[in-house]
View (cartoon, rainbow, N blue to C red):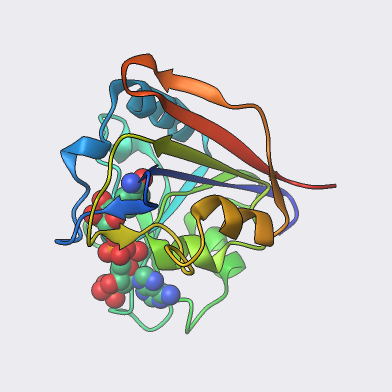
Length: 185
Ligand SMILES: NC(=O)c1ccc[n+]([C@@H]2O[C@H](COP(=O)([O-])OP(=O)(O)OC[C@H]3O[C@@H](n4cnc5c(N)ncnc54)[C@H](OP(=O)(O)O)[C@@H]3O)[C@@H](O)[C@H]2O)c1
């Protein structure tokens, strides 16, 4: 599906975690500047894709088309809880079929987690927006990508052919930044 541009989004702690030991996103990883950046990006996206536990829960969320990964169905099904949402089990149907069911075959797809879902698209991102909270640590938390913490999130992105672009400051008080990791031509 060459017409679909694939972008990834995550905020991680200094030790590469996206959630705490209870598999919840800790308040320590929530920053207004990052939230505004993430909200604007999702408002621009044509389709959101995530695992069953990674709903972004923003005011505009009900308006967004989305694909939710779950093993509770065989292949592809409408989501009884949300007419804009498609349930997808990659073991039973292709990514392209899931996007078709969602009514999107061009534009921008935003992949928003969790770790296994990020991992599935590692060789397909056009750009991955990695936000980092350098003063936050989440001991025993959930690593953002497969391969973390043995390797850093940055090393994982680089090993999949992505290169860091210009760093943007999202929260000056906490030194939170976002870096676009783009696929080299
Ligand atoms: N810091 C951040 O930016 C960020 C980003 C994303 C998520 N998070 C946090 O991370 C936590 C969620 O992580 P999570 O590990 O639970 O990940 P998740 O991917 O959101 O949810 C896991 C569920 O998604 C489904 N799934 C995932 N991979 C699948 C596959 N290959 N095939 C079929 N179904 C699949 C399964 O659902 P079923 O059980 O229905 O089969 C699985 O139980 C939450 O606390 C979330 O808030 C944080």
